[in-house]
Length: 205
Image 1 (cartoon, helix red, strand yellow):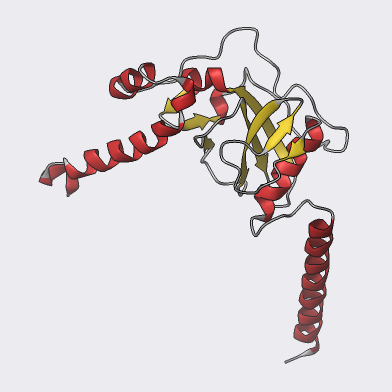
Image 2: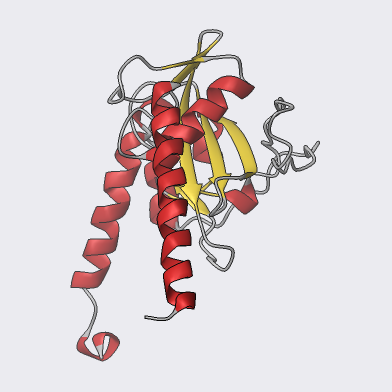
């Protein structure tokens, strides 16, 4: 092992020590409350931006932040810059709005959307999923000065464009109330499983 290797190892160990110290500090400050550090951080950011409080229980069904009586479900994502997937799933339970927080690999907030529960069925592109590019009409209206990296898209005066939804999914969605939105996720899974099981030998090969 030469001097360059020794120096690199020392730098790595020092960086890990700093990371560990940072995690412990965030735990002490009440930001990280579980083993899902990114998700915890996103919930804390949402609480700061909307002037809310974190749910007292990490397994609180439906919502994660209570802001002025509004129950916010937080969906967070930390994706590499070259990751083409730009969509979120929505959990079931009682909530008033879904807030989507997009983080980069350095924990910087790059995009933020807030969609009322009553609008979810109109913007999903398949049951239980929201595509971020369809949410230009739902940018978060409030941004804390401490988060300058958040990209707020200009609010559209027109209603969001209706995404492409298959006829079966559209009929199913029409028959569900927004309070039953969580069941759409399970419906989507069964639908994909059914499609796979009914493929012809030619389609499989």
